[in-house]
Image (cartoon, rainbow, N blue to C red; front, side, top):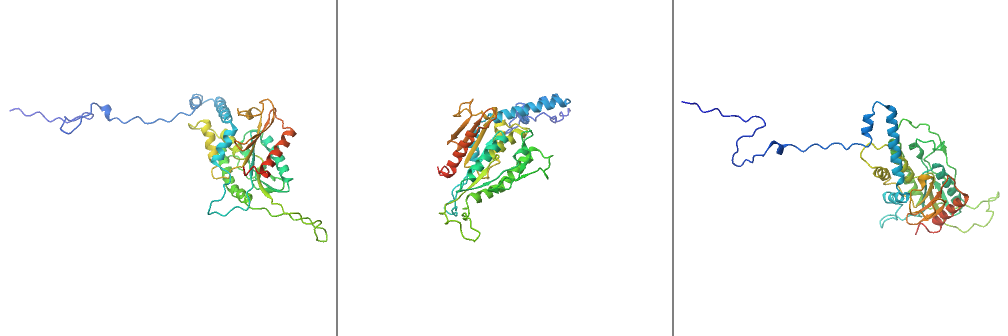
Length: 347
């Protein structure tokens, strides 16, 4: 008598005979998992791997990439940047129904631009003009905005973060600064410092300054009858660059090591200003090729001048050829005074 054939066991990779209720796959490909997502290559990474044994070629490639990023970042019209920052960090809003009212509401004025030397010159002129106004009380805030720049255009001394009221700025050296820190650490540190300074600015522009006291004679009596009390307006001035200048420098000097496009890279830097008080008036100084990126300018490209842009709450100073003329400075001083004193803040 013949024995029944032994029961076969399916080999690995085979399937048992079809049974009712069991859906048999057509082939093994139906059970395979989808392929894993691969990392998006970083622009320039292939070149770096190809020339990994050539330090000079690495430096040339890195320099080329940084120049490309700078060109694209600075191609973004500065008026668009001003509008974006106004949404990220808006000016001080009016108090709500349940909030205490402000004693006064002074403006925040920032001087921005691509050339730190010109920005400082215009900022100093505006500071002098406003301090001559008896109805203005000016206080300035500055930062070490040059720490992100690797160029020789930086000022020889850095300015402390402390505000100075109706007095000169206080230059300090770089003592205590860790020079080995990267640009991203410097930028985040600057952002953190501006968060604390933002509270000081809010308090300053919403608190009515003390009235002036008439001078007294040696006998202790006033030299002249007390003048009529005039309300004094606190003005927070940021004369050496603020959110726009620092966002530009950070976007240029912090390398892109991921899939971010230069425009998104800049917007990420700008977004970090969220929660910091915004400006009421921006004075933007254009100089050289990097200052001519905006196509909506109302001044002839080959000529300098001053333009008031109500659509962006900005005053633009065009200074081609690397020169600021006195007539442009006088116009800027006049326009800023008109804004802060003449009701531009209410408008």
